[in-house]
Image (cartoon, rainbow, N blue to C red; front, side):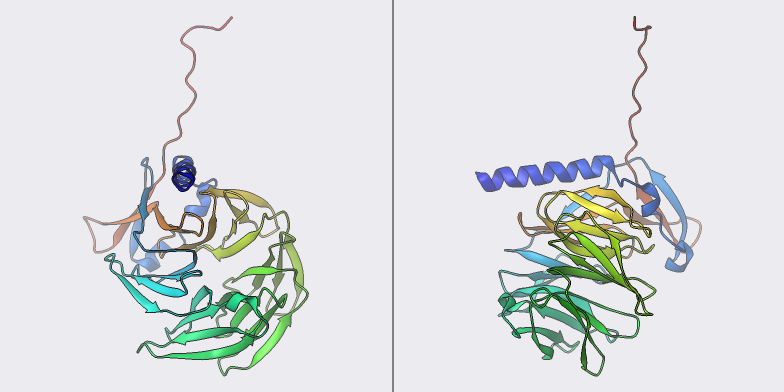
Length: 323
C-alpha cells in the first residue's frame, strides 16, 4: 500500500513537470541543428510523452545512453548492469558486481563500470567491458568510487566518496590524485572545455577545476546533489536527491529550477535530441521524458525537430467589472 502511494506521488510530480514544461525554455533550444541533419525547429503546443522503461530493477543508480537509443543501467543493489536496446529488448551486460554505481564510455567505445564496493578502503574498482564482451579491471584499490567522467584527451576522472578526493586515471593507467578534502564528494561532470565540476553532498557546494588548475567554488545551496550532467548547450543540470527538483546552475553560480521530478530521482541524462532520462532509485524506475521529436521533412532529406511545449493557459478576464 505504501509503495503504491509512493508511486502515485512520484507520477503526480512527473505530471507536474510535464504540464509545466522546462522552467527556462531557452535551455531546450538545441545548438547548430544543421550539424545533426535537422533543417528546422517547430514548436507544438502538446505535452511531452512519458516512456517508463519496463525493466526488472532494484535500485538503479546511473544510466548511459548511446546515440542509437541503447540504454545501459547500473543497478546498485542487484549488482548488475543491464542493457535496454532501442527496440525494448532487455539483456544482461554483467552481474556479480559489488554496488555498480556509475558508467562511462571511453574514446574506443568500451564500457566502463565503477564499483563502489560498500565503500570499503581500497576495494573499489573500475571494470572495463570491451566491445567483444571481455572484461578487465583498469583501476583498483579505490576508496568508494561513486561517479566518473572522461575529458577530451581520454583521461578518466573518478570521485572517491570515502576518500573525499578525485583521482585522474590516464589512458596508460597511471592514477593521480588531483583534488582532496572535498567533503563527501558525490558526483562530477566535465564540460566541453575540460573544466571539471565536483559536488559535495553534505555541504551542498559545487566546485570547479579548470584545465589550467584554477580551483574555485561555483555554487552552493544544493540539497544532497547526487548527479550532474551537461546538456548539448553545455548547461549544467544537477539532481538533488533530497528534493523533487533538477537545478540549473548558471556560469556565475546562479541557481534556477530546471524541472520538477518525482522524489527519489538520483540521476538523469540526455539523449542526442536533449530529451531527459530520469533514474529513480526509490520507485525504482527509468523514465524517458520526450519533448523533442524528429519527423521527416517533406521537402528535403533532413529531419524537422518538433518541440513539444505545453501551451500555458492565460488567466481569463472577468466578463463584467468587479466591484
